[in-house]
Length: 528
Image (cartoon, rainbow, N blue to C red):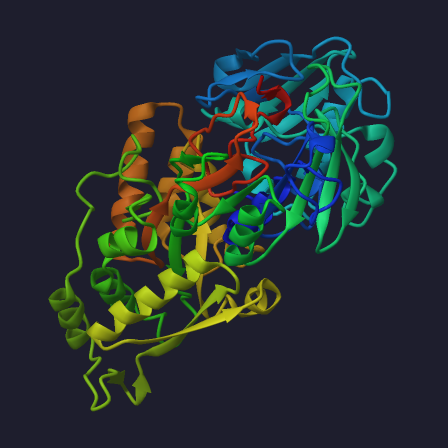
């Protein structure tokens, strides 16, 4: 997950700097003078473009490259490394040999020292990277000459190679700055297919093709990300021709199905929507409340009505078709069970329909980000279902600046989910050691059985042992939920049909420039 997993598509979608079919948002996307440009409307902008602080850590950055990358089917392939790693010492050493002739966009050569600097800086506790725990297995990273890098692990970590999609930064620039406050955060230099040309906060990010890109200069020469927070406004601007493409909720995307000039792309994802239920909350801290809410929610109706069928019911953080999913935890809405749980826990029905216990009403606030129609609809549906069980949920929209300091005590309509390996999303979401660590474990969930399962899954190479651990974890979340998981949503994109080579991957929570049909933008070819 990203350092701010709950911002959902907002942060990483913002990474999706789109490519402008015009020099600035507002000009016609069909303007023939800009045939080699594209503009994509996204909901938010990133806080930083520095991998040292978490940008692009899961791959597909357009400014940077990792040692490895993923193909359409998420299979690992060489990027800055010339081949997949050599693995030794029973899974405790990974050796990479760098591709020859790679330069940063300023013309300086890539060396093993840059790789060492990148990983060591991220692992330094002084660096404000809340995803540091994802590299917990790394004991040492060292250069073996200019073109070889050796990672030594503290313990065998089965999915380690997939962690080396992390972008590499130039030591000769970033090494001269404070990683937390330096200019590199907004003036990045990398080896990727694009360079940042302009960043107008709150308006757009513009990227230009990197003439030094080792993979060949892209056909799409200019990329612009237009910041359009509101879903409805994004759809309107796409319809008017002001945008070439956009990330849209399924119901808004459906309006373009008969538009011959546009094409809709739908990607399956691990992206869940959930309601965090902080353990410090006076009401949400009661396990019976959390269990009752899990039973009261009508997930299938949310999929049908909110997502127009573009998604699946979520019974935990992993989708039902994931090979690691714990079979048998699926369940439908059961209001009788919800009411029974509350009765047994002493939450008695009141005259106004809201239950109470020891003079305290079963009432709490649920925050959701303003402008996000899908989350708003989930929040309202959740509140409606909860009311049927006698729990009052007061849905309230707010900016992330307002939500962040309140999420310890207030429920939040959050999002998350990572592809590749269950450790990639579950550890930062649930481990008690990360409670209150930025946007990690934001509800401060603390369950020793879940911690043990997470640690076992992370440290074992035996698939059967790992499978049992993650099975145990998911069943513990049913018995003692820290959140109410609602849906796994499909990601839907609509783009002007002017380019060939567009595909989608199985996507994580983060989507936009990191995923979406433009994940391989540098390979697009103009239609003939």
